Image 1: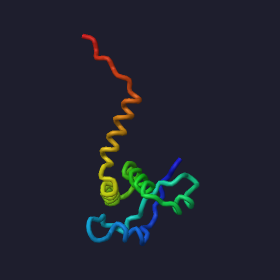
Image 2 (image 1 turned 60 degrees about the vertical axis):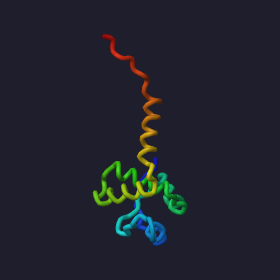
Image 3 (image 1 turned 90 degrees about the vertical axis):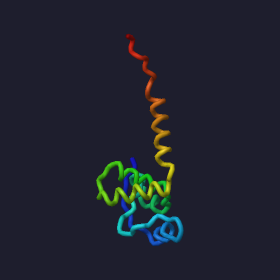
Image 4 (image 1 turned 30 degrees about the vertical axis):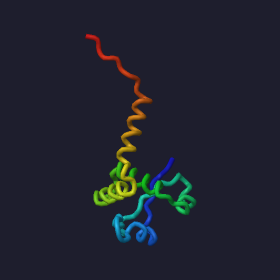
Length: 109
């Protein structure tokens, strides 16, 4: 089972997404949630990926167990990094509905 840990914003991360032009404003006072495998935190952190960060942010948004300010920030970050995330989620929902729901016959009248 994976779990979410919170990391401080690394200096390189601030520069990477807070440069001139179109960029997401990194707030160094808000920690980064990262989804890591249970017991594998050290090796996972060494191989930190954007997918691990986005997954962590989505879990935190879903669970709503942090400040609303953080949830808003994480939501904005996810939408900035993956502008098509809502479409992807909708497609996955539709796929799961097709797989797990048998078609229903209309009621007889």
